[in-house]
Image (cartoon, rainbow, N blue to C red; front, side, top):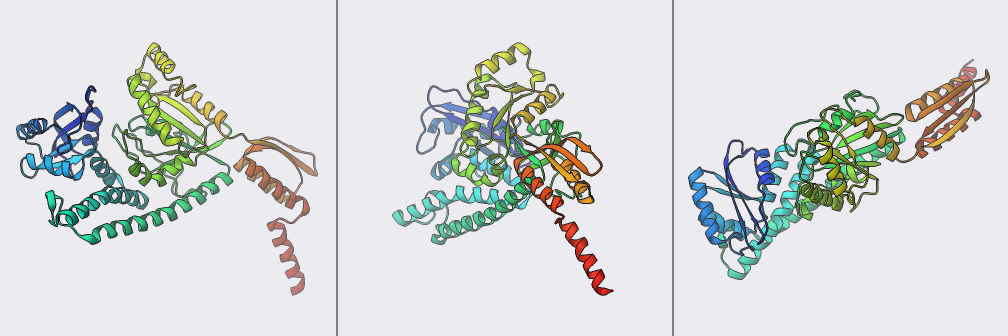
Length: 452
């Protein structure tokens, strides 16, 4: 664990740009580091040190001055750059790049088998090119441990690739089970809504607000896997896995799933490693893209672009942009931001998950954006089976009218198309007297007559 370890954060940006160390500092604190110094440079990348060599000397002096035990670089470092920077620093000071830090955070938060597998997969994909670099250098220079990259083991590449294959197979098996569970939920009348967005946008707080009236416990007969709580902390990556809660938005039964928050500048291999978690977003009926409305508009725009790039790659569900934390933004500023972001978020809903402001409007918007239900009316002969079907319709759809005329019951309802089709099949069985219950009763009567 890195709790309490003093660290200096550093970042290089291309010439002419300005470096913002806010996010890397937040990430470092999320991993448990104590940020004791900052350093940045605006220049083209140096092949040997990433930074200019003079800037690395400044970094060395800052590390000595602050007694830091780690340097966290908000860039992706090559294996040789990592070694070269480390060679300048005091002995024992660790050099960590952006993606190593993110993987460290993921590893700390991985509390389920699926999350642990995804972290392991990401770590192996990160290590593979470094193992290949060792192999290439060892073959070319015939010097084990060349440039401090460690002893070359020609079997390591094969081991990594074999482990990657094994983990992908296990994750695929988990994904199949989760897809089956999603379809079972839909067949039970639930709409699936996913919360997506950047870390610290307030997704978990908003989820608690939307779902605060209904909890699903461990003993829920329909969905024993649902987690009745979602953490809500001012901390990055609180929700590494997915958390699902049941909520009512009006006439629809909704399952809300909170997923891992996005982070800027993630490489494709890292996003792909967490595809299993992102499937909760890709395969939802509706996605709520949560954005922190208190951030500068340029930062909001950049994050929206990144989110859209990630979501639209596989997602087919409608996306509603939710501007959260409106309680800390005045009305005029909020209007200006909404106007500036109109191309990316043409019709957003501004809410406060903290105070509950406009959450009712969001619930109504969810109802409007979800896939349309079909309306149906069934005329059933009065019987216990008919009453069971009416009860089933209340559980799986929205019953709008129920009338009795002595011999028949008329029920008018709206539901998902799949539920309507299933209700029609059940109604046909009721009308013909071929329900499983009726058949079991008839069989019992026949058996009873035979025994006499």
